[in-house]
Length: 522
Image 1: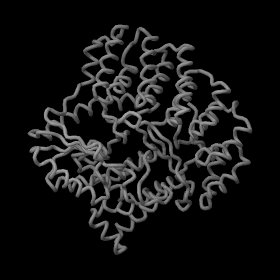
Image 2: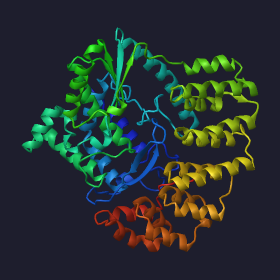
Image 3: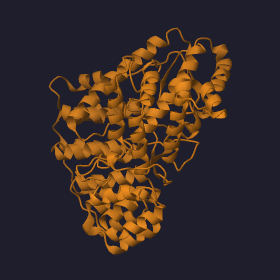
Image 4: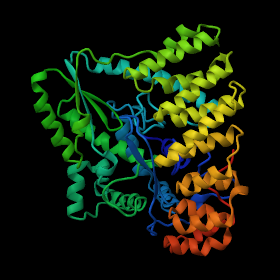
């Protein structure tokens, strides 16, 4: 029996995480002291395109992943629907809680909600960028323990295996067919049958309504769900939990994190037959295996480093770190990253913060800057930690630091790397450096909507009428247009016309009236 408090916790978590990816600065959020947006009468009937940007993937260097921010009214409508149909959340909690093969499940076997932030698979189970230090510290402690626990679980589960088959679903989020969401409740065969005969079954009809609202987040498309919103992780995990049932029933031994599977192989000569069976199961859900990422790893496998113990050995009990120890620590973790232990450097960065007393502030800052400039996967986290350490007086920054960051920002602007541009601007702001008029113009002309929002909110004195008119004529994202209309009320009428908003004008009027902003200054 799943308690009502459990479904309320999951619903509140979905609200809290909202429409923004955890990889953005926390200033982007849906929190408000002036209005409850979930009580503002949002409709899902307007068809407004989500805003999409790109970030580095935690895999192959140079590979980029599209992240999306759905239009807020459609998202609020979805959440309100789930509030009124909590049995859908019960279904998700139940199927996920019973999926002991998954390291990314929503709930455990006691049906307690597990908050795993990272949906992109960075190798260590999450990159929390929470402002609240106490919350962040608890999350970091959990990550360190869970990483070791998961590795031990893998070793035990795959005992006797001669190898591990690593498989990845090709374009997983894009491959989810929304009309089969009812498979979460009915199974894939039951879902397809109900769809073909347009069943009047109450459970099925609820998932049809869910399907409609999920599609509205993505321009009413049936193929694919958005990467970024927390709700997408909930849905995707529930669907894969259904796939996992079929894999278990077929006799497979495996573990999974998000859409990355690791299948135990006991006889190498059975490998091709196993691949064929896996393909058949995944195709039932319209999923295809990414052959480029399909790797067979022979014994020995699951060799790992206990990062926490390595740090303790190198630092000692007093937690005071001199220059030599800083060099030793970073050399050790940089080498582990170089040798294939992805996530090692990000783990070190997060552990370092708060826990250790650093004597050489300039050297420490140099290492953080080197990570920022050379590890695109860790850039956002490095920015976050530099800001924290600067505010805590644990590092020293000088004009050379500023010049390097500006050079890096110019590079990211030329490459049109949206997320990196946002973080570097944010870094300059919260390390008390100024943005020149020349750099300001480059940021505007970059057409990175989120970066322009940061400029509008953090440096309003730099924005002139020419900038606003240029953005209004050249930019199309709902979130930037809203933020401009919020500060320039004469644009409100054009806002509705430009986005073809008909059903949600009253909803947005309430947001404008209460000065609701999607970006809050720290």
